[in-house]
Amino acid sequence: MMLADWRDAPRAGGLAMAFRAMAYWLVRYRRTWRGTIVVSVANPILFLLAIGAGLGTLVEGPVEGASYLAFFAPGLLAAAALQNAFVEAGFVVNSALRRERIYSTAAATPLEPGHIFAGHLIFITLRLFLSAAAFVMAMALFGLIENIAIALAVTLAATLTGLAFATPLAAWAVTVADFPQLNTVFRFVVMPMYLFSGTFFSVTQLPAPLRAIAYALPLWHGVDLSRTLALGTATLGTSLLHIGYLTALCAIGAMIARITYRRCLHE
Amino acid sequence: MARLNPLILATGLEKTYPARDRKGAPFRAVAGVDFQVHRGEAFGFLGPNGAGKSSTMRMLGGVSAPTAGSLRILGLDPVADGRRVRARLGVVPQDDSLDTQLTVEENLVVYGLYFGLSRRAVKARAGELLEFARLEDKAGERVEHLSGGMRRRLTIARALINEPEILLLDEPTTGLDPQARHVLWDRLFRLKQDGVTLILTTHYMDEAEQLCDRLVVMDKGLIADEGSPRELIERHVTREVLELRFPPGENEEVARKVGDHVEVLPDRLLWYADDGEQALAQATEAGVRPLTALVRRASLEDVFLRLTGRSLTD
Image 1 (cartoon, rainbow over the protein chains, first blue to last red):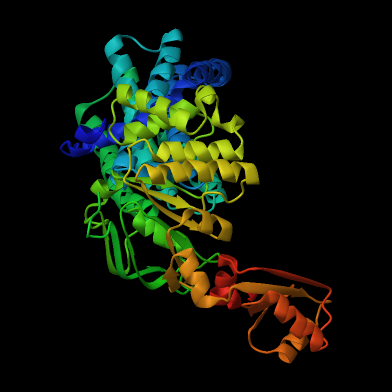
Image 2: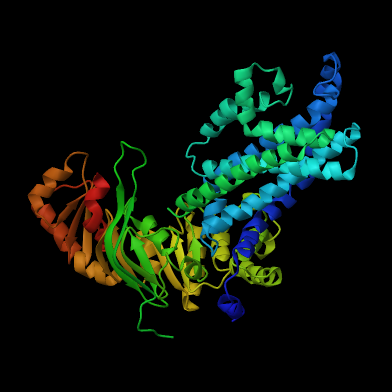
């Protein structure tokens, strides 16, 4: 038998199983990656031109010690990571279970729900990283990135920001039975956070009670981390606080996802 | 290779789904069933929609834990040993769940990778399977361009990628045209010849008669009876059936007149008799004037109607 030795082979470890699950997403991505890269570079260029260089000229004086464009670009980068996370871990995850039945197909094989989640999350991380890298390239075109180390640090900060949203989002989206519910959350949770996390203006301008809320929002931590790294004003303590907050979200999301994926894939 | 131990052994198997919301009640889809499947058999679950067939299949597929009772597949517990069980199963779900954006070959390759096959092994295997599924000239085609019959054959090919010992098919020919169904039956028959154990659900009687060595009739989560198609026919119905049609509303009245060997369906009466022609003569003598009368051999459909008829008219 051709497959006999394979079947009797010792069990593959969890990471190897997750990579099997990820292979599907790579095969699928092979069909669309060129288009997504173009969008990932062109989109930030247009935004930086229109809002940073265009609208920004109306903003008087430096914001948090930088030109408006230099202030705005890393904020938008972090906010874009949130948006990408919502698409990849919200809409795509929900569709993978309900509409396209990608998860159910994988669940019929030796893959466990945890492997299927981990495999998809690895792919989402890759997508977030590539989008962030493309954005940082666009920033470099505007002279906003001083050197390669800063480019890498900012890219990783944005990837972590996206992941801090993607992980709990996936844990939740897999349980959602009706698709429009996702849109509701996008409109009433994601968009307000997008606007009030210091993306477009400094949160120090907000009245004290609102400022306290902004500081609690995960996106603000991603924005401030990306911005201080890009502007070279990052301090170790604050950066570690941001990274800790975002990592904790990833960890909590992953723990919940292990439960919800099992419940929804093996019901 | 004959084995004394059954390949699948279910005892008192139950599946209850929790309530969807606070107001809802838990739903018991499978209410305690016993069955065994032996190596090389083609075994069928027959029953109307909602009988518990698909829930049973999900438990057999190792993706749904039984609420009560015991289930052994290949001597293993499909919950504790899900990975090992699923590595030796092939699953053909009711809705295909192919990736329509990917090509025919990509669908097979990705699925093979799930099982841990190397890329080289999976490519070689994909070639053989495409030939088996008569899709060899469609390898590079996107699935969205395939017909329903081709998609179903591809789903079966996909389920065979790991050379499974048991193939689970949930309503394999629902929605296919007659030609496509016959092609599919032919492929399944070949698999059976090769020693693959087939387990299928269906609500097509002809399919069950064509493919199944043994089957169970399910109704409302329970097994109504079990046996080969022939045994079931002999046990529950007579050799022949006389079908009588009347103008709407007259069925009940006629049924009262001729006795209790008659099954009343919404559109016709079924009169079970060993000699259908004689029954027709008897009916004519009694003054019954049907619009049409037809004598035929009893089939599995009659067994099905006898055992589950009441839930059909609900």
